[in-house]
Amino acid sequence: MICRILLLISLTSCVSGTFVVKVTQTSYQAEENHNITLEWMFTTKPDSSSTLLNIDCYMVTDHKDSVLYHVHEGVEFSGSQDEHFAGRVQSDKDALTEGRIRLHVSRLRTEDSGWYTCDVKTDDGDRTERCHLNVTAAVDEYKPQKPTERPQPKSRGRIGLYVGLTAA
Image (tube, rainbow, N blue to C red; front, top):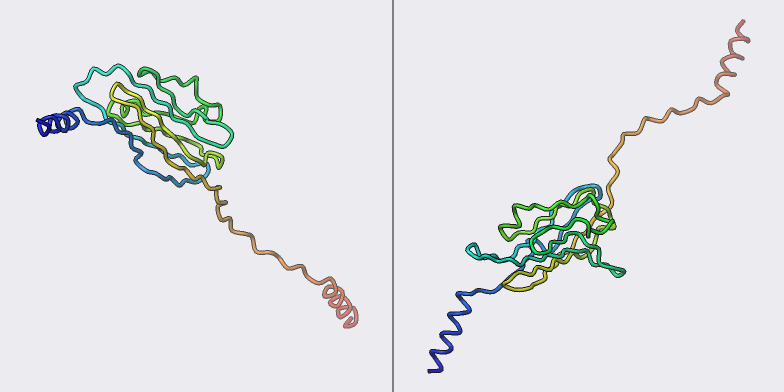
């Protein structure tokens, strides 16, 4: 009897599955003024009529959490985005229906470096995952320098003048 109960519990957990949130990369490296795409994935059920979808993605700093992306009950709210990211973050809405959160961050700044966390809540569960972004300062492009002209010594001109006058 105990074996049957354990088997039933085991089969139930296999069929129902578990809710998972994964980050596609744990670490990102980029240069200032470039663009990057941060991506998380979460499990979805294709035949489910799930109504609950809440997503909060934010940058974690010592001082505060800056909201990057916010979805409440399946509706994106760009008004809650932190002013630091205003106009620089675009989401891929098609990917969201496939269980992927793709955030395109443009015109990166060195102060964008840090930990990015995404909390996802659906009818199937609530999970959090994070990744790290390191933005390095832009390297100045190599500009060839003009060859420097060496100044002519002033005394040579005078010597030529004296030699010319002496010969006359």
